[in-house]
Image (cartoon, rainbow, N blue to C red; front, side, top):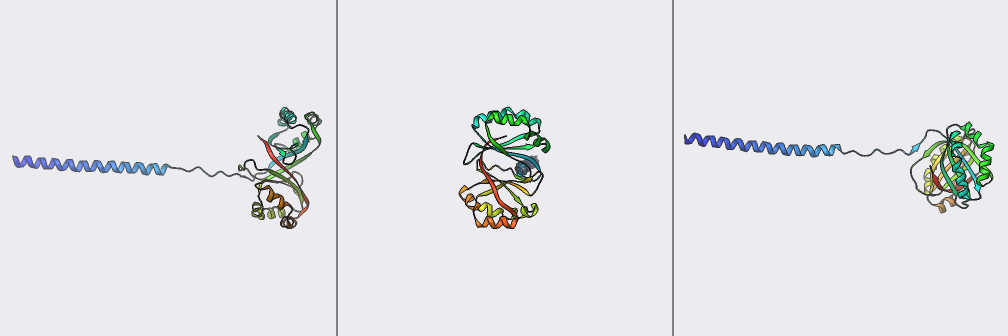
Length: 245
C-alpha cells in the first residue's frame, strides 16, 4: 500500500512538472509570436512624388504698382470675376530689386476665357483703380513640367526666351541640370507659349544669387544656349514670393 502511494505521488509530481514546462513553453512561444507580429506590422510612409508632368494652363502677369497694399486690396476684391473666367490665383511675387514690380501667377481652366478676361475693359478699370502703372506683361503658357517640392523662400527667376526648336532645347536643358545646380539654380517650372512652343518660359529657384547671376553672364551658359538653339538673350524677372494660394 505504501509502495502504491509512493508511485502515485511520483506520477503526480512528474505530471505536474511536464504540465508546468508545457505551459511555460507555450507562454514563451506566445510572447515570441507577439513580438514577431508587432515587428511585421511596422510600415513606412510612401515616398511622395513632387514632379508633375501633366500639361497645365497658366497665366503670368507682371506690372508695376504705385502702392502694393492698395493694389493687393483691389486684386482681392476682383477674385470673383477671375473665378468666373476660370482663373485661380496661384502665386504673387514682388521684384527682388524693385518691390513695386509685381508678378501674378494663375492657373487657367480655359485659355480662351483667360485671354478674353485679360483683354476686357472691366479689368483695365480695376487695374487702373488699384494703381497699376503702365501696360502689363502677360504670358499665356502651358507648363509641361513642374517640381512642387518645398524649397522655402528662395528667390525665383522667370526666364522667357525664343528657341529654334522645342524638343532640341528641352533635351539640352535636361542635360544641363547638374551645371545649373552647381551654380545655385533649381528648375521649378518649364513650359511654352500656349500658341507657339518656340516661346519658352522657365521658372527657377536661386539657392545662391551670387553664383546664379555670375552664371547668367558666363561663357558656359552662352555655349549651352547656342547649342540648344536659343535665339537672342533671355528676359529675366527675379522675385520673391509674397503670397501663396
